[in-house]
Image (cartoon, one colour):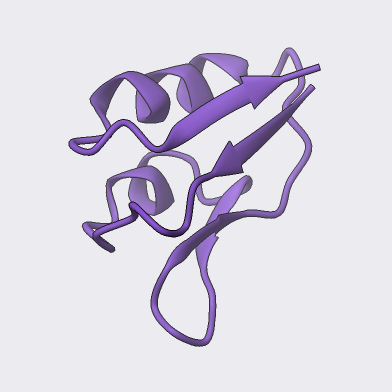
Amino acid sequence: MKAIVNQEGCISCGLCVSTCPEVFAFDEEGIAVANGQVDDHNYAAVESARSACPVAVIDIVD
């Protein structure tokens, strides 16, 4: 599985980056990106970031 951030809607709040830094980071423009692989070890943190995203721009796909 992997996470995807809809960068057009991202408001750079940093919640996803602080919740799961092994998957989420900021790009050079300050917009969140998902770089890491979602696995059993970090799935709960990625799901938490997805659920808490204030603009609902995170998806988890196979």
